[in-house]
Length: 450
Image (cartoon, rainbow, N blue to C red):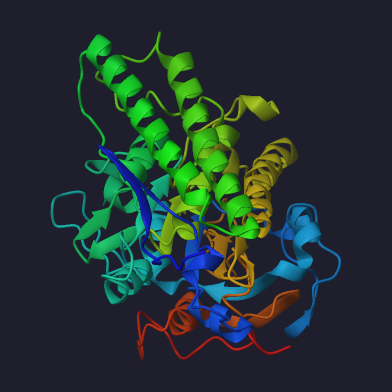
């Protein structure tokens, strides 16, 4: 037995595989309290566009904090995780409202969600929103992790041009903003994320050479995994099992990326960036969630945003029998058939969140699980998509935030409570000192008290 550095990696030519937190990385004879203190807190934001059918989302509880009881149709998927989530009702993104700028609610909803800043109405180069909350945390954590943050997505968007009533497409297509003028576009390619985490990507465009380099990358990974076998001989039984599970997860993700690339090889040009993107939305999102789990598990980063689809998303979902575009359906004007299809899309989206929660709850981390040491927000910058409402937004926060959250409840806040209050409270739990931000009026009560 030997004590490993928390930053120990499996390293070989062209590949670097960070290790999960193993017992061998704790000081000798460390108490449970010490182990708990060494496990970092993480936060992630999963954004769904175009609002949610709110009557099938919101529990029927009075103002205040109540145990999470009967759940309506869409949020009912959370029932197996009722002890791991807090449903939040009454939060508002005032910066997403028009404030004299007229149309453009979708662009403002996306741009204002994490910035809590009213975006400038322009589709030129003079875009302006605000520094997003995830980037405030990323700056504070600089140097503690390999990446300050990761920005992931499941739908291609463009960063220029007019996408929504005079608003730049950049507003609809990015959650994260590095500066008030610089959005962080999400990466939708699983291959690009995998190679950023485990080795340098190659932009070779010749198909034959790209294939040879792909084989070489896989052999490099095999060499690194061989090194892992040597490491295992120095570890205790629990650590060997944890390392085996982790390396299996890495290999499984790589195989699924390769399968997507093989299925796309005939229809995707050699110089296209998206060959590793699966056709199936569920597989695409789950690949991203699995990469997200590895990134948190290995402490590559502690801050991740996931744009499950862009605002005004025209995406259809033939896998659940819906061939019309999502955005168009949300403008249903009371048509019950369209409302039913939007509800089914909302249910499909939340099933992907359930996959993530199952994944995080299965991974040991410190003296608990990865879910115990995370804060995962799922929601949208719009409530009712038909009316473009920016108040009473759908929001759920999952995990225990390293013991700083007490889930299992529905908390209904007073009308017009700023969403910024939630984000300020999360920054506190990440030990990022910010007194006021956006339109915050204080910390959000009811997250840690029973």
